[in-house]
Amino acid sequence: MKLTYFAGAMLAAGAMSQMAAAQETIKIGAPIPLTGYFAADGQTMQEAVDLAAADLNAEGGVLGRQVEVVTFDIGDLTPDKLTAAAANLIERDEVSVLINGYGGMGPDIPAFCPYGIPYIHNDAVSSVVDLAERMNCGAIFNASDIDVNYGRIVFEQMLASGYDFPSETLALVHGDYEWDINVAKGMAEAAEAAGWTVVYEQEVPYDTVEWTNVIGRLNDAKPGLIHFEALDPSVATTFMSQLALDPVPGAALNIGYIGATPGVDDAIAQGQAEGVFTFTLNAHGTDEAGAAFEQEWMDAYDAEPPVSLAAAVYDMVHLWAAAVETAGDDRDFAAVAEQIGALDFDGIAGTYAFNDRNFIDSSAETQPAQLFQIQDGKRVPVVIGDEVVAPVTAAE
Image 1: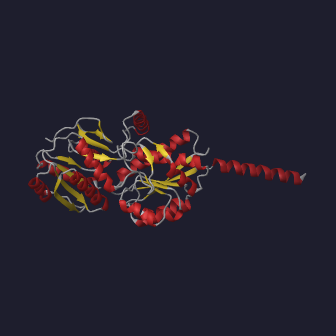
Image 2: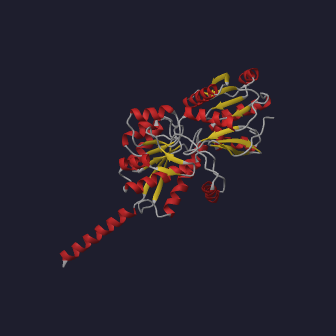
Image 3: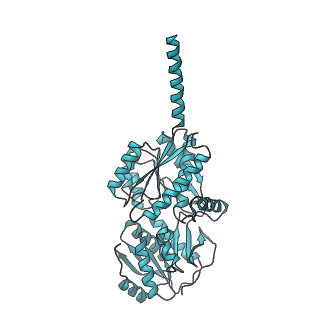
């Protein structure tokens, strides 16, 4: 009798153990900047991951299990923060994937690569792709195009926009970070290929607050297009506000990627950016799916989704989930990574089709860039991919 009871208890315990294992959540690691310069983008990343996870859970989860988001603040994106993120998320919390909008522009690669865990990010700097290749990081995916191509694309979109440039001349003002330098390089190459002339280029440190000398030289050069590229919103807003006091007659101003982020929302709302252009590869589309995403975001957060990163990070979560469902095991990292690379995943921001270097060649058919102009205090899409979708306004 005792033996029979003991055997029955063991069977019951085994069944309960199997049920508990089946009910364990699958953890999504989100190493994101919640403090520091990039906190506004970090909040967008957090909200996007949370919204996508909620969607997955409402649909039954992944492999029949609920998903759980585990966040780690990587602050100013320094190597020590990324190393700590790896120790906490991968070793302690045992997450099955790492997802962020951008995670260090380089230090994230040596921090995460040795674990072989799928890492989907948006560090669109060329050297990040190079480093991942040198380290044989087959599970690391940059879910957009790279910096030099950004520069080429934005110049081509500015030409397509229909803006009446006073001359075919380009001025470049950019920060000293690799992203800034390479975007400027891509723009210069595209401009020269189109027969334009680069009449001024100035690299500036990120602590620049006084722009009198730069603006004076811009007025001397009289460019038809001024492109400003720096990843600190305060640098962009001080440049815009001071240029508005001494504008270059007729010149268009594009403030690059930073203008698509929440960091310049206040400047836009206060009318300090009227007529200014900005761009991103990470905006939600204007189609039915994009409209549904906007409404879902509004319902969740009582605000419109930021045009940059919100849709992209949301898509990354769903891309990973689709790969896991095909692979059949969230802990088989190699199999999941193989599926991520093989999928042509239709997301809110476009189709995620990775090339053989694990990033995405932007095009109208894959992940179309979007060019915006600030009109009446709002970012208005004027060019999507190679299609003009709204008229531009001239410089005052």
